[in-house]
Each structure stands twice: as C-alpha cells, then as structure tokens.
Figure 1 (cartoon, rainbow, N blue to C red):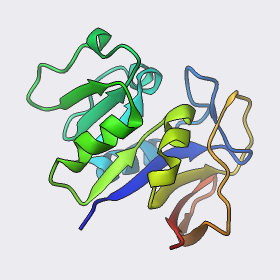
Figure 2 (figure 1 turned 180 degrees about the horizontal axis):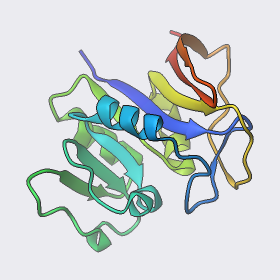
Figure 3 (figure 1 turned 90 degrees about the vertical axis):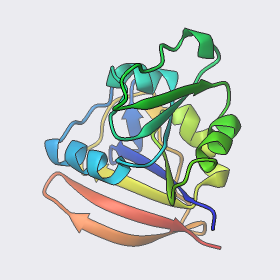
Figure 4 (figure 1 turned 180 degrees about the vertical axis):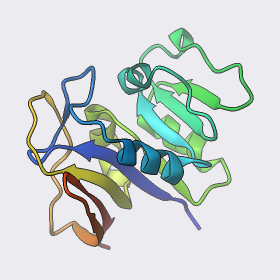
Length: 165
C-alpha cells in the first residue's frame, strides 16, 4: 500500500502561511502536535522552510528541496536524518523508498503547490485570525477535499481533510 502524502501547515484565516521568512503564528500546542504527528515519518520541505526551522528535526527524515543540494549541510547526528534534492518529485520518490505509512509535506508555499497533485490528506492548524504575508497555502476546493476531523480551540482549530477519489 502506498503511503499517504499529507500537507501539514499552520495558516491564517485568509490562507497566509507567512512572509517568506517566518510564519505569523506560533502556538506551543501546535508545535507539540506537529512534533507528535510527524515523528517517525519523512518530511519534505523547501530550503527556506528548513532554514527557518534552523536545525534538523530529530526522530524523522527531512528531505530538503533546493536548487543547490550541495550547499545544504546534512546532519551529522544519529538523531536526525537528512537529504537534499532538486525537486519535489525526487523528494517524493526518496520518501516512498522509506518504510512508512505517511509522508509529510511541510512547506513552504511553492513546495505545497508542487506537491498538491500528489497529496492525499491535509493536516492543518487553521488560525481564526488573518495575517499579512506574501506566501499562501493553496486554495482548498470543496469539490476536491472533504473535512474529516476538526478539533476546536479558542485561537485555532486542528483540521483534517481527505482528497475525494
């Protein structure tokens, strides 16, 4: 069985992910859930997202998509595994070779857009406030996606979507 390919993101009510350098919202509960959900699974992200995180995340394989893979300093610790490739297609192929039931696509905006045709699920933290920023999450078309879960919180909701067949 093929692994699910899941976009994971935190986005403002107006779809904003950030300004290209950082995201507008940070909630401790969201970061804790992100760690719990993605641990043990490969994650695909762009170079700017990886640089914004500032380190290789332990307990998962991170595949960085960049024009210049040789410029990405790969992890030397056994706690984290990392690769750098030149395309989302290469990242998905590499992730599919790992024994996993889920591959997480973790941004940024261009990586989500490139991975969009392959995604089976969305795992979103939908913030109740709008934000300024130039990077947006792709539009979720209700003829393509169905909401399968929602966990309501005062400032945001954790929401899951599944692609309709």
